[in-house]
Length: 76
Ligand SMILES: [Zn+2]
Image (cartoon, rainbow, N blue to C red; front, side):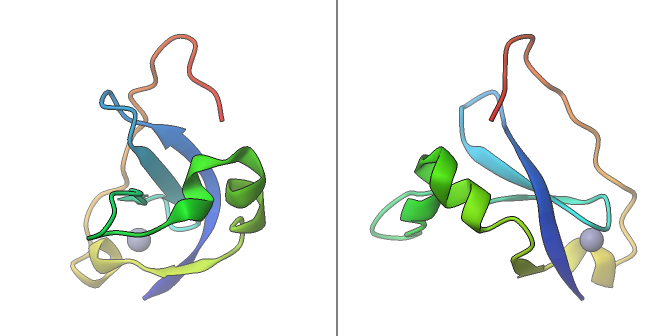
């Protein structure tokens, strides 16, 4: 099922994680040449992709919603 990105946070490895409308999270790593998502490294890029639809595999398997383990001074 496709779900819109509603927000982001970074995990403990400082990889970007998109928070989807369904309550699931999905990594949106910029890890060239395997994963090229240059947009995710800048605040403007991330802003632009708010509302972008990502395919959520977790919805397909009815996975429980993800929870944020936010570091104290983590913000996007
Ligand atoms: Zn989902």
